Amino acid sequence: MSDKQTFAVAMIGIPDQERNVLKNIFKLSLYRTYTYTFISANLSANEPSQILIVDADDSEAMVEWRTLYGTTASGSSFSSLSAGFPIISTVMVTKEKSSDQFPYHINRPFVATRVLSILDQVAAKIPSISQDRLIGGEPSPIAANEKLPTPTALVVDDSSTIRKQIELELSLFNIQVDTAESGEQAFDLLAQKDYDIIFLDVVLPGVDGYQICKTIKKDKAKKKIPIIMLTSKSSPFDRIKGALAGCDTYLTKPVKQSSFQKVVKKYLKLS
Image (tube, rainbow, N blue to C red):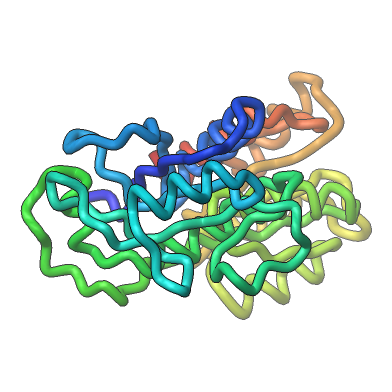
C-alpha cells in the first residue's frame, strides 16, 4: 500500500491567473508524500476539502470565508459541511511580507517551494482519519503522528549551479539531498549513510564519474542504489561507457524537467 496522501484544496477569492499558477504547483506534488489536488470552492458532500486557500487581500473573500465556515482566532476553520467533512485548516494569501495574524500564509508572488512547504506544514497536522474520509475508506489505525521515511539523494557534480538546480528539483519531491563536488567527497558521504538514488556527473576533478560508478556498483551494500549519470556529451559511445560502468540510466545536460521527473518517479517508485 502506498504511503502517499492526497489532500483536497479549495480556494476563495484567488484570481484566475494565480489559481492557475497554484494548480501548476500542485502538479509538482504528484510524486511527493503529500499530494495536493484542486476542487471547486462550491463545496459539496462529494468534494470534502481539507485545506482552504483564501485571498486575505480581498475583503469580499474574507467576508465569504467568515460567513461560510466560521473561524477561530488562529485562522483555522472547523465548521462541518453537510456531510460532516470539516475544513481542517486555512492558508491565507497576502502581499504582506509578514502576517502574524494567520499561522499559515503564502506571500505574493508565489514561489513553488514556499507554497509546498506551507501546505506540507498544514498537511502534517491533519489527523489520519481525515484522510480516510477523503478517500472514502474505513478509518485506519495509523497513528496521526507517524512519520514516513524521507527518500535521500546524493548529487555529485563539480558545478555549484547544477548541484543547486538538482537539489531544488528534488526538494519538490520531498527528497532529502546531500551534495558533493568530487569523487572523494562522494565516497566520504557514502561511507556515512545510505542513499536511495545518486546523480553523478561524468567529468569531475580527480576520479571521473565512470570510475566512481564502477566502485559503487562493486560494493555489495551499495550496488542496488540507482545511479543516474549526468553529462554534456551525447554520443552513443558515452552511453555505452556509462552502461559498462554500471549506471542505471543516462541524462544529457541540460536535462529537461520532464525527463528528470520521469527518472525520479521510475527509480524511487513515487507513483
